[in-house]
Length: 137
Image 1 (tube, one colour):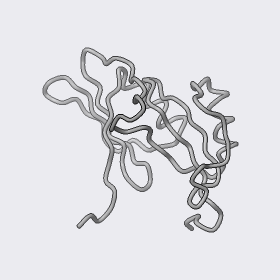
Image 2 (cartoon, rainbow, N blue to C red):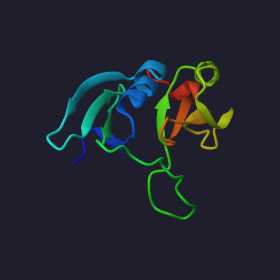
Image 3 (cartoon, rainbow, N blue to C red):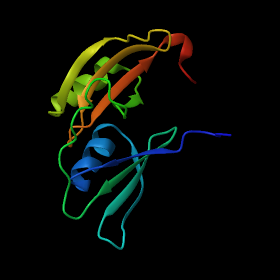
Image 4 (spheres, helix red, strand yellow):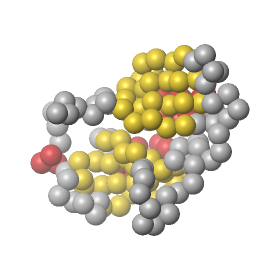
């Protein structure tokens, strides 16, 4: 039934700030940016294996709260990187808010190292490195 992952959507209080984070710092590529009839800006960012869709309502948006324990919802969005330690150092130097420093992954059957940061709206972003045997060419 499903052919592949398409996109995940999120809301930001400031489109330019989010594009600077996701494109300039993380390296996603802007595919589309437009303003809808109701004044909401929308952007699609190519993440290599799917898209990130970002909405920016004209009146802005409140900061994202963390998902409380035992509550259904999305915990974080994860992006694969070549080196968690190198990527983390670059993001930390840029002043990105840190949630959790680089460490070995709990699900070590799939991932090797992970770190958690916050985007400008407080959304938790994980950067992850695959185990050597699972890295795609």
